[in-house]
Length: 448
Image (cartoon, rainbow, N blue to C red):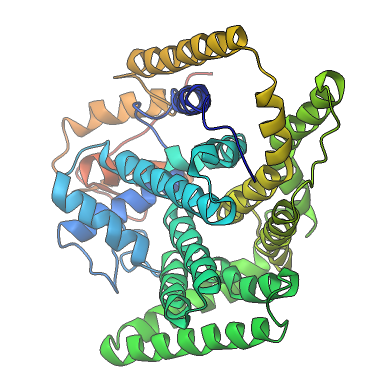
């Protein structure tokens, strides 16, 4: 498909500006979602030699040996702490790096499927319009790391098919294995990509899909066996993870009333992107001087269907569990964005061809203003709190009197305040206990 070579700069500037605006309340501020603080504690501890890769340590009173998730994301974040030191912003920087790597891989996949990197702003814009994407980027979720490896696995699979070379398939299997070690079974849905691709690729026999999927299964089994052989401690680790997190809370701890809840969550996540698609269709119908077919080129149709079905395979299996959260879908979100991007690429290209020079100049001005607003908002938030301000202020006052590596006493009714445990460990390397008296104590009564 021939696309116009100019006028993409305003869209890239607009994209960066929107990202900065969406992250302005959390990028350079203190405070983070409970899970993100917990993972930062474990990673920092690992970097400082408290706990190991196969035996991560959280606190002395909660998770002295933490096997609730696979350890790779902790290990990678621990490298960031080892390189940069123990600062409150290290986990935010690591989280943003995974966000940027995911964006890069989305752009590279787009280039592979359209032969045009300049237009990668289109799927990226549709991607960041999904609320969970920037929320996870600001909150240090394990899904961030897993998403990078999932995208890398798919990118390598596409190269394998385009070059007809099984070496890339093997490399994709390694990345898939790393996705599993980052967050678990939710990172394994790229196993079905060969099946979907070969069904919709007229140049390839459908039987090749199941064969390649089987090859990936065999490779994952071989890599797991090698890991258990080289690192014997990995076997009991993953056994406990499966028993507790997958078979235990994963199937029994309900966070939703119906298994179909994840479908409604998905609809909420893609709503803005779908609205953009619909608005473009309506505007094109009203202003276009000629009829533009959305599926003008076969390439658009094939990749739209592949990515749409593949995205659903990353979401619908979550219905097996009654423990469902929005961020469990994070690794599937890029593929919905890529699908929608292919859906409207021909349309957007045709619309931009009709834009007059004066309008293009205004586009540059508006995009620059949005970028400036994003930068100013982030600067204005430096030194502020993004969440949990009242508690963090009180906790910091208390930590001035409490030495590191202490265990402090709290009330029994406060022990289930899990964010307290995370923040005290993260900021002061202090553990909380309600089972017996300690020299130091802490209580917090938020003002109503």
